[in-house]
Each structure stands twice: as C-alpha cells, then as structure tokens.
Length: 270
Image (cartoon, rainbow, N blue to C red; front, side):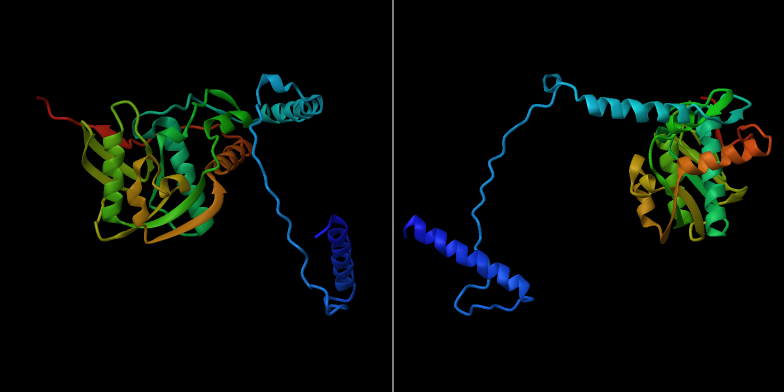
C-alpha cells in the first residue's frame, strides 16, 4: 500500500472517530471501523546519572530553604519541661516507662476500656530527653516514626511469651518497656511476672496497647500475630506523647518519670 493511501485511510479513521464522539458513541459510517487503530509504541530505557554532576536547581534550592527555615523555627517551639533526664534502661528506663504509660493511657481514653498492659520497644526511642525545656523537635527526634497505637486482645499465655521474649532480648542495662507489668528476671530468663500486682492467668484475656510495628512482628514480637482482635486507634505514639506533654505544661506540671519498679534482676549467689 502506498504512503498516500495510508495517509488517506488514517484521515478517514480520524474523521470517523470525531463523528463517533459527537454522535454520543453511535457510528455514522457503517462501513468505517468503530475502534481507533492501535499504535506500536516501543520504549527504550536509558540510565540517568543523578549526582553532583547534575548541578543544582536554583528554584528547588530556594523552595527548600524557605520551607526549611519555617520548619526549623517550628521545631524550636517549647512545649514543656522535664524535671530530670529521661533515658532508656531496665524496664525501659525513665524514658521507656514514660512512653509506655502514655501509650496505655491514650489507648484507654480512645477505646473507653481498661488496658492492662502497654509495650514499647527500646529501639523505637532514638534519643533521651534532657532535663529542662522540651521542644517539638526533641520529640520528633525521640520518636521519628509514624508508628500508630493499636490495642490487642491476647491470652495470658501470649502475654507470658511476650514477656519472656522481652527479657531474653534485653540485657542488664536496657530492656524494652512495659506498663502495668512487674518483672523479676535473671540472666535473660524470666523468674516471675505480675500484671498490676496479680499473677498472669494463661487462659485469661488481656488488653495490650502497642505500636502497629510490633503488632506486625517487629523486634521479634511475632507472637503478637496471635491476637484475638486488633483495634487501630489512628493515633501515632509521637502525637500521643506530644498531647501528654502539652497537657502537663498547660496544667503547670513538669514531666517526671514513673517511680514504680518494673524490672528487677534477682540472681542466686553462685
């Protein structure tokens, strides 16, 4: 077929397509095809180097600088104060215990139900909070993740498995944090565990609040997948912590660490 014939046929197809659209989808020429011809498009990928040789985009640089300064100013906002250094340690330390308590309290407020235990992994807390002013940026550095609070219903047997895992993966200086549990351990082995002063019943049901990251098996807590129900709260741990600190500041109170003993090492003398 000659090129001129191909061109004329394409023009007729284009005209038919236009008339088809104007007529509400009904063909005005029965002898013409009712579908548009397909095109053979071939894409050949090619690598593009993105490094210093690409140069600097002035508009992007100005945009980042403008919003970056606004963000830095916001992060310097003081939202509260701490009466002591909040650090990680046994039972989560002062920092972990505080965060675990905030998770538990927030979960109770959202669900309207008592929450027996809360769990926060030490690795999710990325810096201590120094005594003195607490800025918005400090909390974003402590908790840089978007981990959300989830409330799980688990058996006492699963709760004991969680506590054993916590004890085994900790050491004599730092462990993950639990709220509502008192633990006695020795050399990575659990000796006893109480929930709010009572022995854990293997067949009883307990409500545990934690992060969606741990619920999905993070930090080796794969046993959390056995939860009977999971209630997402839609609230991040960071936002819960920010709300708590601001509320305490509004009431004229400084942030203080929980004082109850949550993790004790007792080993018999050899």
